Amino acid sequence: MAPAKSSKIIDRGCEKRAMAIEPFHQTLATHGLKLERDQTTTLQINMGLLCNQTCRHCHLNTGPGRKENMNSETAAQIVDYAKRCSFEVIDITGGAPELNINLPDLIERLSPLAPRIIIRSNLSALYDGKQNHLSELFKEYGVAIVASFPSLNEAQTESQRGRGIFNTSITALKKLNSLGYGSDRSGLELNLVSNPTGAFLPSSQSETEKRFREVLLKKWGVVFNNLFTFANVPLGRFRDWLLESGNLDRYIEQLSSGFNPCAVERVMCRTMVSVSWNGYLYDCDFNLAKGLYMGGGKVHITEMTGPPDPGSPISVADHCYTCTAGTGFT
Image 1 (cartoon, helix red, strand yellow):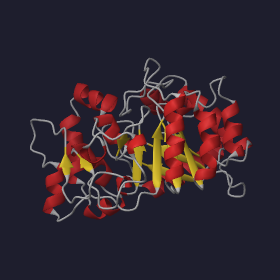
Image 2: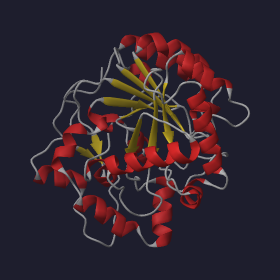
Image 3: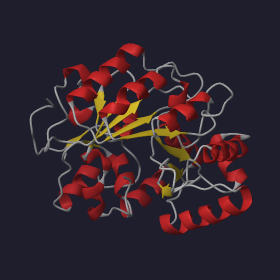
Image 4: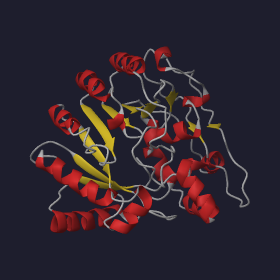
């Protein structure tokens, strides 16, 4: 099982900066809050850092040149771990998980083990001329797709994700719609994620979803189920850009000043365990990017007899303000 139950909050990697921002762990203490695990219902799997894009907002610095990629041995270990647990959701991410040759076999083997499987896609990797078969596989196993689509503005999208990505994404959405994805009647779920393209927090989710739904349908005939708006996490390539543009301090101040105590109860790390391409466990994908192991201890998936224990500590650092600002990040 996971390390022994503790109420201690673990803080790693706090960095010196010119401005006076209260450390995240201290903000929790000020509000009388503890960040500990509930029942773990979601297994998140990071297939690796290989990606066909080099997005400016990426917290993991993924890209075409990255060699960190899950092998078949680790994939088999993850299947064995899922058999030892009773996860409600298995959430597959990257990089671009579509580029990992072990993905089809992993989905087939995990499908009987959890009622809901999610794949996080940047859309362009799904229809790059080589991976077209994957959408049929996703349909066969009822995999829900969470697709990055940051903006309805072509210039804004391509400033964040690269030239030509906007039209490629629209084409991919149309193809998914043709398979039944995004239709309320098909049971094939297509959700979009919109991240801001600059150093600011997202707009109202409900208003953004309404606008996306109207514009995508009117201009391109595209439908989807839900849209989620998330703030960008100041890690990886996005942090580098914030530093270069002189926006890092101001952005982190926005996040910290927007701290919402009520959001702490709903953060995803309470009910999720994240496993990296090499089989080590983290409280979330952002802590993976930061190098903060689950509960502060380096544990491999083969060492776990079951899910992490309720009440186990969650590693925190100042990037956690992203998930607790405003309505939160779940």
